Length: 444
Image (cartoon, rainbow, N blue to C red; front, side):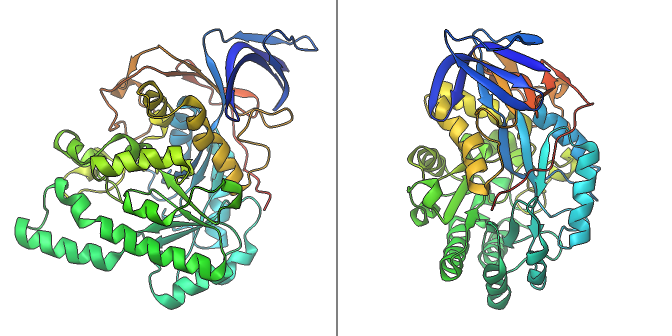
């Protein structure tokens, strides 16, 4: 089937141009600039006048909670929410139950996604102190190795010198790292408990999980990556100081890359007063000056990717303060609209948002034929409308947990349609539950 998406502004590879795009089954068949027509008749035409067509978002950092934590979320529920937010591919973290630290557990997640995921998928393999011998068995459908150098779920905390050296020496794909120093966090927690009781107010969260905890751990990770000449990808950068360890060279030349989340780019510590534990995450959302530095890091090239760290919890899990409330928040459905809101605010250009959410994940992880609007690439696309204000409410949240830190916020950009492998999986409020994504392939 040939589908023509006409009269749109195509945002791709640093430019925004008027034109049309033709889909033929699961691939992009033609890209027609303004004034040019498709060479062949199409079966379906979608008029995108006034709208913007982008590559589908590739989210390199999600927690879809399956298996074992399906009271919070499932692959089916969160991939539906992702589709509604213009996300066409995701890479899921290993801290499920059981943790994804064996080949059997990894294969089980791929089977589950093939059955239930509405969009494309891959899964990280979790590093432990004693499973690095399994790295050589990981195939081209695995996006990377996840390393927790701080508090983690299950047995995935790796912070002793011997264990870390094994992980870095044997890694054969990107090492995605969570950098927070547990010893520093524990000392800070003891100090604040002594002053404020067993569960200090959430406003102390960024002081307990402090800048020092993040920076100290990242220094160690960078040293190991350089020692072993390995690709290190630093997840959810949260402080200005960490940026001192990153460079602005082109992504193709980098061995140390970084991600920032929409939460850390949107919120700051003053928001704890109104949003409380709804914005409690690890690493913590920090100061306004840290947020400003992260935004500048996106524009300068020190930060390479915007990924969500989408982490649904039940609201009952979010009760308490800095130590007892669970960390993490759902955000995947609203990541693209929130970043496009920052375009309207003059923080980013729309081309920069597409670079960081679509192109850069494809390039960094070497995803085969996705992340760009190019002839012959898979037709993973999102059509968005500017000047279309809408309000986030419980009624339009598709994540199973049914809440969002963005509730009540008005976004001016609306996701109208999302295509995955040429199939329209989301259309103006409706998810096509017949669509299934594919396992991503990596060309390392």
